[in-house]
Length: 78
Image 1: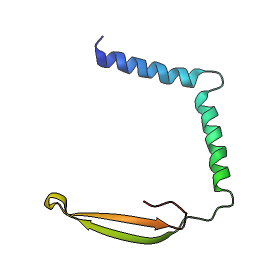
Image 2 (image 1 turned 120 degrees about the vertical axis):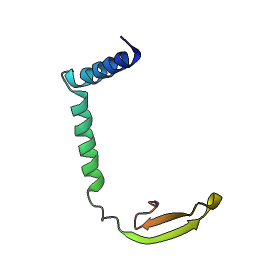
Image 3 (image 1 turned 90 degrees about the vertical axis):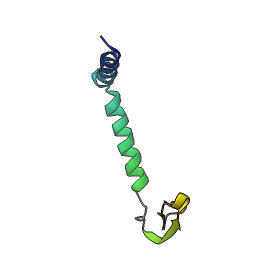
């Protein structure tokens, strides 16, 4: 057995242990995340793009464009 086979078998064993347990950990985490997602969406308006700003740069003579997107959600900028 080489290193790759050992790592592969350990990763399969770890994943199988999560799915094979009676109260499946994957199922518990999925149900919690679904409930939190529904609670987060309840009563909120959809996020809309307010403004897009472009920033032109050329470090080391490589032309780059950076786009800054501002949204209606406070603090959400990307």
